[in-house]
Amino acid sequence: MKQQIELHLGGKKRKFTFGILFLGNVLERETYEDYNDLLIKTQKNPFKHAPILMYESLVNTCNKYSKEVDFTEKDVVDWLDKDYIKGADNVVKFLQVFFGTNENKTPDENNQNEAKKK
Image (cartoon, rainbow, N blue to C red; front, top):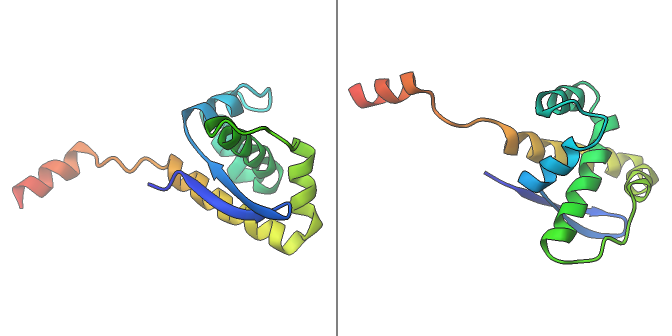
């Protein structure tokens, strides 16, 4: 399972990481009631919610590697808007990895028992 992605944004290559602290920070925002609400809202309106997630992901990366956070959430939005085509493409790539990280890939018990029988 991929838990990070690198995208060219704001004039440089940036690493976006996902994990428990990232999700915890996102869920502290008043925008989201809980994890399920986060997923539903992001799927319904990805271009509104992706910049929030991207910002929190970049902050998570900075904290993870003890680097200074030298940008704001407004900067992330401005970077995405500056070149709309590339910005939209970056949003899509980011969300593909984000949703892929959050999918439950655990096999259910029935599938495991059927596999053993064969």
